[in-house]
Length: 146
Image (spheres, rainbow, N blue to C red):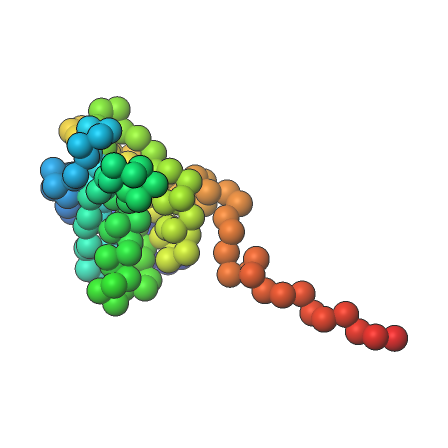
């Protein structure tokens, strides 16, 4: 990937989708039976993968996308470029929470793949057109007394 708006190369897409599909096979999904795998490409070139992990208390479950991003950060990768998500058939899009976490770490491209077949690549900006970011947390300048 070159430049701020570059799409991943065909080789990167292939590697990421293979890694996401492999992670999908490790998913822990005794409740939904909906396994998902994700693989993220760091600016360093490293690929980090993870799967979704469910819990009987559904709110404690974690999506594969966030698991992969959190794992990448824990391993020291703070600049992330692309993420591949592998679901069942048909392919499913990442949830809003995952899209927001992708935004936080600079993901630009999202590859969505089913268990088999071709993958589609999207710009995160097209999937999350009004993200919440660091600029939203900046306090306005204090009011001056006259």
